[in-house]
Image (cartoon, rainbow, N blue to C red):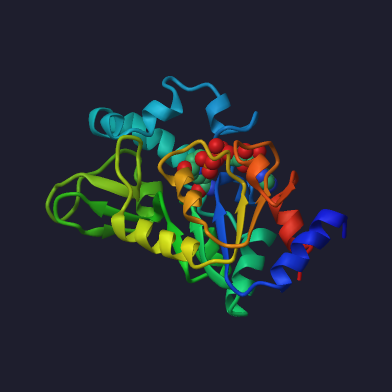
Length: 240
Ligand code: NAD
């Protein structure tokens, strides 16, 4: 184990109130591309920029194109948790976590066994009719060739993910803030920290040690007690 991983191991061993704040980089080792890396979705060519496709306005005005992109790029239903997800679940089971706050929508923390997960941007695993609230599983969205109306009321079916122009869920934010403010160690990982208001939540941390694990530099590197530039799955997977 190298010196930085050893330093992180020491922080983890001396803490029982760890909060993890993660983003798309936590799932790249599960084969799900992030947005802003060179091989991320934002650097591929589409008819419209992904930021526009993933907006509320676009969802309302061009549902066919929205769902074509969403089905192709945002529904990795076969992906499996990697060593980062599994380690966090293990720490939660050992009573060491106040929670996992994630910007991801892939459900891999829960698949790994984590229970205290605050999904700031929702989940691909939930879909609802906006009119009557009827629930639809992700396989329904995957298997439909085109956007289909709700079979009960004819309303529009929407993935429970937070699109650009939409607000975050208040209960999820409150839970996340509580997990962050009650932690003594915060590990921020796999996020460019450029998507607001989610990225701003790390400002609620009042604990002792702030650690950052990310492949590329982020705006908060200089404020952290420990910065590890590397792969979060490899690094957390090497810890006990
Ligand atoms: P981002 O794409 O802006 O940034 C990802 C960051 O992770 C980059 O800084 C990159 O250097 C780093 N990274 C990539 N692989 C890594 C690895 N293996 N280990 C450590 N670092 C790694 O992602 P973001 O900050 O989360 O913001 C993008 C938004 O996109 C989020 O709000 C999220 O909802 C959404 N998104 C989610 C998923 C998912 O659910 N898996 C995938 C793509 C995008």
